[in-house]
Length: 245
Image 1 (spheres, helix red, strand yellow):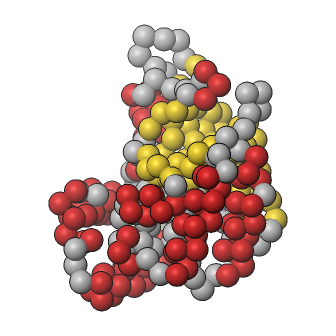
Image 2 (image 1 turned 90 degrees about the vertical axis):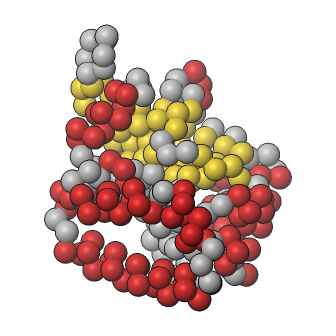
């Protein structure tokens, strides 16, 4: 069995959410061959050198699961794109590129955090290209810690304000962007998060050199203080479900 989750937005001032995730690691996750965390694992990340005891606790819990035999994969989200190799070493996990293809049970699946699909949000995509530039990321992680903390607080406040004022269609994945991404990777199954709109979508997909095919997009849900979301994959089933803490 494989498990996929995203958009936990872990933060120290949400202890019920944290406890729910730690219980998940000690329960369902122990039955999985692999756990895929597809971005926005933390609500904010300003560098591996800024880890607090809270972050260390999360890393230690992940490492315990990895040591028990569950492979853990982590993808950057828009909130934690500065997560680096130091954290991954401590947590026993491996960073994935966004997007990437995995092929469990002899079937290819395209994985993404999902923010790159929201192409109607032109301002965000412009900022994303800037922040994901390796030079910019290097500069950000080498700023004094106090500066990074201040920048993170301001960025979070600005993001929350803009999200509230944007139309739903702007923050949703663009249908053509979805088709283009899947066609370019020659896959008919996509798993992503980011939009906080959990659902399973089926649609026709045209790919070069083939007849139209039925494609499926699995959208992971965001976690709250009372509930988590997971996509559970076995050789025979693929089920998106919410679960209470």
